[in-house]
Image 1 (cartoon, rainbow, N blue to C red):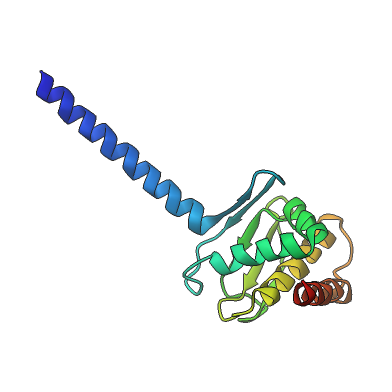
Image 2 (cartoon, rainbow, N blue to C red):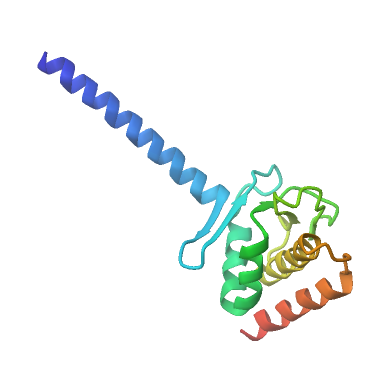
Length: 156
C-alpha cells in the first residue's frame, strides 16, 4: 500500500510540473501582464513571429518612454495579432469589426528597432480608440501619435 501511495504522488507531481511548464510557456509567449497598471494583453500565436518578445519589449518601451500612450493602449487593446496584416511586414491594422474584442494587428517580425514597433502599436491603439469612440478613422491623428512616439523613444 505504501508503494501505491508513492507512485500516486509521483504522478501528481508530474501533472503539476507539466501544468506549470505549459503555464510558463503560455505566459512567456502569449501574454503581456502588468499587474501594477492593470494591463493585460493577449498576444496571438504567429507563424511569422516565432517569439512575441519584440512586441512585449516594445510595449515596455512605450511604458517607459510615453506612459500616457501606454495607459491608452492598456485601456483600449486586449489582443494583439502579430500575423501579417494589411500593414505589411512593418506596420499594422485595426479592423474594428468586433469592438468588444479590442484587437489590433501588428506585423513587425522584420523590425529590429523596438521604437518602430512601439510607434506602430501606439498608432493602431489610436485607431482602436477612434473605433471604440465611434469616431472617423483619421490616419493623420494616429500618424502624429506614431511620430511623437518615435521622437520620444529616440530622445529617451
